[in-house]
Length: 84
Image 1: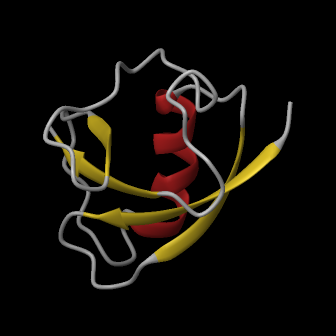
Image 2: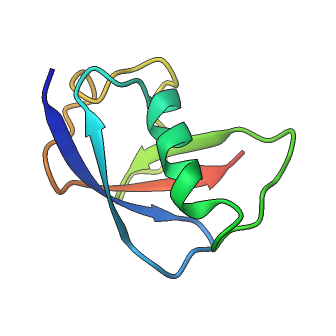
Image 3: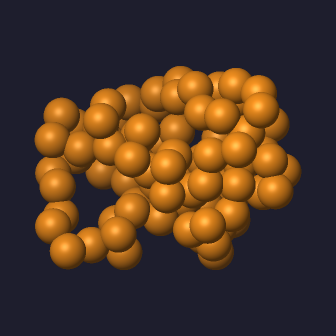
């Protein structure tokens, strides 16, 4: 397990954030960590919706149970988060 700092941008937010996650974290864990620094601060919560993650430049989100390592994400990679 290694710490992987990712550059996250939440749809509707105007601030790019550096978020440290563990290589063994799933996308759902990443979204919960991102929620604490974004939702309710810069982005309105959307109850009943799920936060999804996709790599910067990709249209399709990662599977929610995929780990950071399995996704091939490296330190400082950009990911977009959005409500679905």
